[in-house]
Amino acid sequence: MLKCIAAVSLLVFSVPVYAEQLPLIDAHIHYSHDAWTMLPAREAIAVLRKAGLKKAMVSSSSDDGTQKLFEEAPDLIVPVLRPYRQRGETGTWMNDDSIVDMIEQRLKRYRYAGIGEFHIFGDDANLPVMRRVVELAREYKLFLHAHSDQAAIEQIFKLDPEARVLWAHSGFDSPEEIAKLLAKYKRLWADLAFRSEHADGDKVDPEWEKLFLEFPDRILLGTDTFTPERWYYVVENAEQSRAWLQSLPRDLAENIAYKNAEALIRSGDFQ
View (cartoon, rainbow, N blue to C red):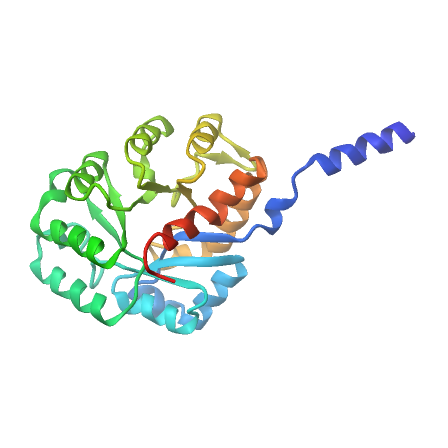
């Protein structure tokens, strides 16, 4: 009987419990115009706090949404400047010179940690508008949050080898392909927003775990509230993240949970 109790006790105490209390930073939140009409800023902040987030890196279409949240909770919100004034500009912004004017005006008026999330693919990353965005990021010491294929990521680093780039959704690439690009570019980070194949319940997929172990300081969490309805998933995503983080070594779990995002934020001038 005593042996059984001892065995059960050993089993209980061998299960990591640290992840349940882990603070999280969500690196991929949007609060666009259709979201703030559905969910007022105060209620949106309540959702983020319910999820137990330490910080939320927020960009919006338009940037007014980000500013609404930042005004409501400057301790929680890390503003990122999205180059979209409204939905529907994801495929046209890189050909619109007026976007540059808008970005420059917002940068003079407000404080940001980065520029993005923007959509850019292939050779479009070498267009004049994108080239200017890279210049502004360098000038203001901002990271770039790029929803891009590998070709566009390569081009951004050609434009500025010292750029800091957060690869949205890890490019929707495989762990093997992600690893190749992370190995090539030391100032490239990758977020897990809108991805689920890296974990099943509280277990991390072996190929993804290999990636996490190889690049423990370059993976970030994210939800991606690209539609208003996704705001109802923020808390669930945080809970799911804590579940699979339990299967990782504590240092690695803390890195992915919040420390990698903190390091990216601190690498610029945003405090």
